Amino acid sequence: MGNNDDFLLDQIKKSIQIATGCTEPVAIALNAAVARKNTPGNITGAAISMDEGLLKNALHVGIPGVQGRGIELCAALGFVAGNPDDGMDIFSHIAPSDEETARLLVPLITVSIKKDCTDLYIETTLTTDQGCTRVITYKNHDNIASVEHPPFSDFVQEENPDAARMRTFSLEDLREFADRVPIDKIRFLKDGVDVNRRIAAKGMEMGFGRSLSRLSKYTLWGDSLLPYVQELTGAASFARMSGVQMPVMIATGSGNQGITLFLTVAAAADKIKVGEEKLLRGLALALCVNLLAKSYLGTLAPLCACGVASGLGAAVGIVYLQDGTTAQMAGTVRSMIGGLTGMICDGAKEGCANKVAISATYAALSAMTAVSDFSISGDNGILSEDIRNVFENLEYLAKEGMKNTNEAILHIMGSGKN
Image (cartoon, rainbow, N blue to C red):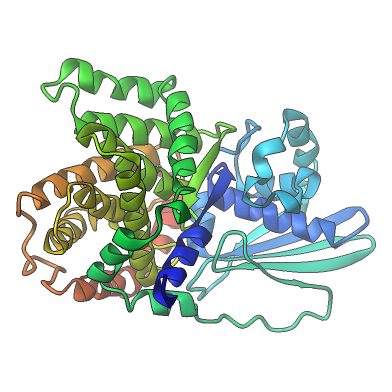
């Protein structure tokens, strides 16, 4: 393997990991747990500041192991019962009794928005009767970038060199990597399929999962890929967003993106009947395409990344499972972005399961039409025949055209009109 192959494999490994619960509450609790570990004494107050996208996603989503919801409770649980060594799996050991203790701290916690912050950011300043500590999480949900005691220095936001390098790869480059990477080096990807299938099975016992099962019973689709992929991905996402205390293999900081990537490609492999090696190579390509899309969008965006990043990656992975050409992969990229770009991210909650199911279904549909040489034309809307231009246009739309989208969503979510 050359330097580029080593880089891509390293990026895949960095982008996936086990997490229990929605990753934004997890990130808040992890940040709080680090602050508590570094601040002895009785807690007298805590001020938490974060970017709009993270606040939006943590506001109303379920928290594993407890009944309550909310940012203050996430932080309080981190103070009371969080173990920083658990990382993104910090909620795996939370018990109902921890919620009772945590609620005593909620009145001491204030939450604010970090203005003019263009990337994922959490800042917790914890004060006790023995000291004060500021902890900053930056860019990635588990990246503790700073742990300081007063006097605090100015925190400098830095560019991500890995994202810049990721943009240099073409679809053909990524496809060639998937073809030649030694299979033993990507066998760990099977763990993502297995873990996410287990939470999907749990989700099939819940409301949305049970309703999705009717698709194969009472529609003309029968036992086909589209209802199957909807069931797997939608049920898994619903269970996760409801706060089920089960692990998920996340991708690029998101459990729903991990669910969309791993289960959509796995569902297609089941129906197309390809072997494990082909599945693993398809997953490696899908994860690389997801990383490419996120290098333009950033960690959190006002667009639903399950459509324009992980769904997009899954679609390319399904084309690969069918031995499709690079041109057909480019076609499914255009179809995905041309079809799903308008799907906004309006915070993490159970309704995300519907978006995951839609994204996964459209990924399968766009992949199947692409291998028949049909896709949305490059002269449509924000598209282009040049795939690099497609991603640049998507970035411009998300970062410039939608600058005030998160602010508007948070206004609605906080106004009581929803």
